[in-house]
Length: 74
Picture 1 (cartoon, rainbow, N blue to C red):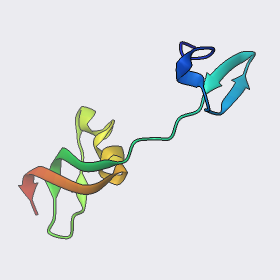
Picture 2: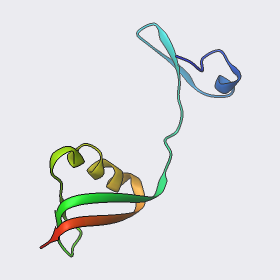
Picture 3: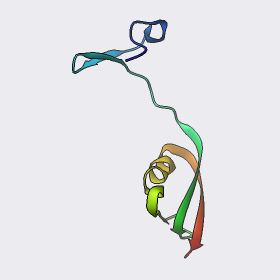
Picture 4: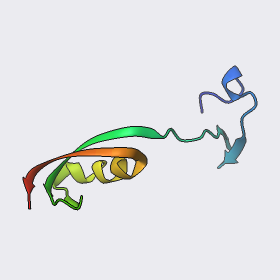
């Protein structure tokens, strides 16, 4: 792993997994996420289709505010 043993690793927690050292970092908190869904309703329930299932649902939960565009409002 790239940062271990450099200035980047100073004052950060390091853990070893499978004989490799890794630097632990806190995750970023997004303020906004912009996502697109196939269908949605006025309560904010969304249905994703195709490759949109991969990250859109995760990103909507990771951000403080989510703006969703839908193809069909039901």
